[in-house]
Length: 81
Image (cartoon, rainbow, N blue to C red):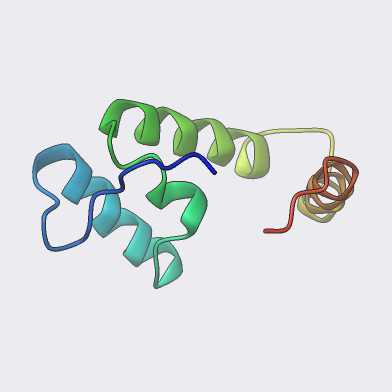
């Protein structure tokens, strides 16, 4: 199984620490999908911005419809998170 070293809260500094702090503020925790991106703060920020735009940005789809689509795609892709 591949291994990606993740940055812990204790060792996080700079942009990574800022992104982790924002994650705690948003959700009260850091989800694994965010934690796995800690080696690259720019990727983490871009991914979160992309997700935020898809799920919260202007759209003809309701938030519930977007969530349902995300669940269906995850299930079809055999994602277990």
